[in-house]
Image 1 (tube, rainbow, N blue to C red):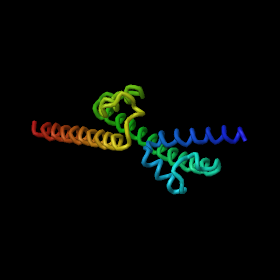
Image 2 (image 1 turned 90 degrees about the vertical axis):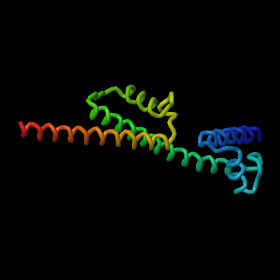
Image 3 (image 1 turned 90 degrees about the horizontal axis):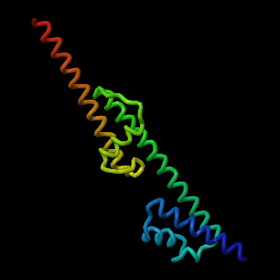
Image 4 (image 1 turned 30 degrees about the horizontal axis):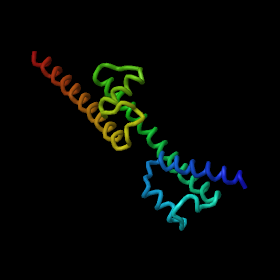
Length: 148
């Protein structure tokens, strides 16, 4: 009986950790528990807590995968921006520092999804602008050369 209590305590701790990692506050926790007709995790059996933890783990994993993909997209956007600006680099830490500076964060992995999306678009637009201005300048120089 004691091992069941220990296992249940570990599952409850895991449940609360997963909620925290997913950013689910007390209201959300109450909502999840209400779906099972209880008001406390202590009222759930081990199997149910484990089932909820597995669902939460799946949600967090897919969210984390999406964030990782967006971080890679942001880094690629910054690499392209630097290349268009004439200062290419192979240093990922430098690129992450630019992302942090642009987003106003101290930690690259702390940049939230919406800010990542905004930064990706900003750097992509800046790169397009730099490339368009470079092409326009080149065309203008070619035109002026033909006049001389």
